[in-house]
Length: 282
Image (tube, helix red, strand yellow):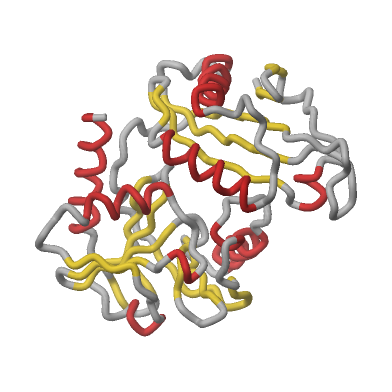
């Protein structure tokens, strides 16, 4: 079942038309959520990121788009799909409806749709399977407010994923126009070198990731670590002890290999233990 503006319908009865602005122009935003036993992980952070993104996109936020209202709609969708007592991956999509060309029509209004599917792991675990990455250098990300949004404009991620598959890679690392490494195709990047932990700053054009925020909060509580939000050059990657990718669905994905360098995952395992402990206490 899919939730269209509060109405539950079968997935085959899609309410999206070819005139939808999200389809025609990418005039849409989304949040990907992990829901376990009807609890939305980090919901407050997701909600405020969505609201900030809607303001950047100059969308008129409906009065009823409160945190409580959207949470209720998400859980209603989870329940309709028989996932209330299990694990769900949920996508909340917000678009500007239909009408207009580049300039939205006078009657354009905010729509939302929510889909839920089953997901295997209730808490976060580290996958020790081999995971190889390389740089994606066909196109670069231009830093700015728009580059950090979870919008429906994901061309680099799409063609980068095709490139990774064609080259037998598990993922690719994205560069900005300054040739700094900013993120993976599906998450934020962290670099570990001794007691120094680095992740690219938002100003470099990376996504303002929810799991990135959680990891930074956990790391900054450890007085023995030096945590930096600083630009990462491609040359630094092969000098690192560990590299890992973060997103709210997987949690932490350690990188096993980048070019000729192999990496461990001990630090990543210690961080994910702390993230799980934080979730249990919430």
